Length: 152
Image 1 (cartoon, one colour):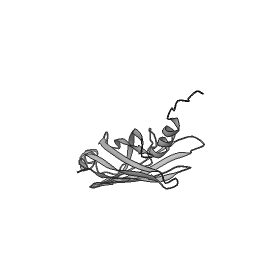
Image 2: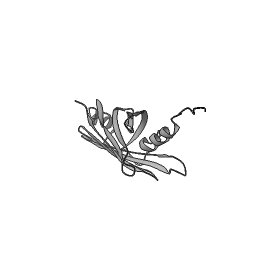
Image 3: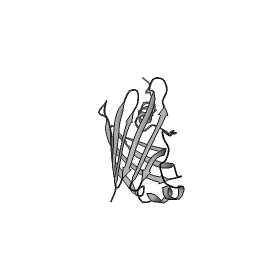
Image 4: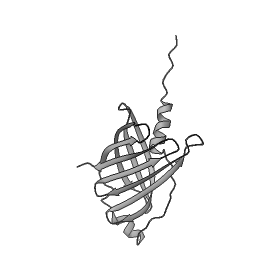
């Protein structure tokens, strides 16, 4: 009897659904008074390491989630996520998130990625305020949330 080697492809597809595997596209425009202000207005808001969890509204799946953020332009933030699926399957994911609104102490991000006719489009919205990161996601077959706080 031959053993079939596990390739992890179903997990990768699920993670693409959960995290919207890059690239992303903007849904809106940055709202700031000037290009210089946008770069310095929330310089400290994105700093540090973040940790929390993610959960699916439909399947009940959930797991750990950690992230770091780095502003790469006036309208974009590089996010580096890592976490777990089913408590034992680790994942890593990098994404460029579009800034759609910004004011002192607040950054709102949105994005989407087409996953094909079976899965539809993966869409997400995130808000970073103070030490909190709150995001929701939805697709044709799933919806859920990511919640993190900045590590001390």
